[in-house]
Image (tube, rainbow, N blue to C red):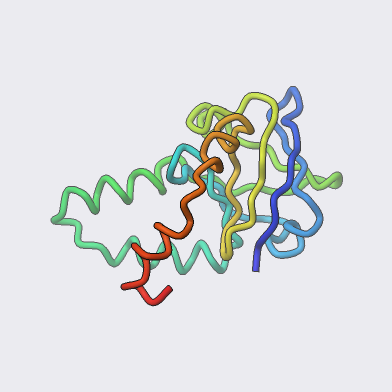
Length: 141
């Protein structure tokens, strides 16, 4: 399971160090794509395959399904770690997530989320977890 919060910086070439604890589970090659909430998602290949199957099962006749599919697949890229444990983030993905310098990597179960530090700090100020828990109770949480 991917978990934890790590702060790193992009270098001048758009590379980011993937923390060792996350590297172990992401592997040397993984998929990175646009995420939700203007962050990036990084999936180990096996998790990407599961996610891909779910999206491909959506009906092509539904406009929302096509838009959802395009959002994740159009900009998706295979990332490969170099010998220093860095991954190059494509420019288009960096622009989507507003990644310029300081990045927060968050392990979120089956994926890693990459956030602009300021965006993460603003997002994580949400403090009403009790309300979230009530709203998710119907889902078995």
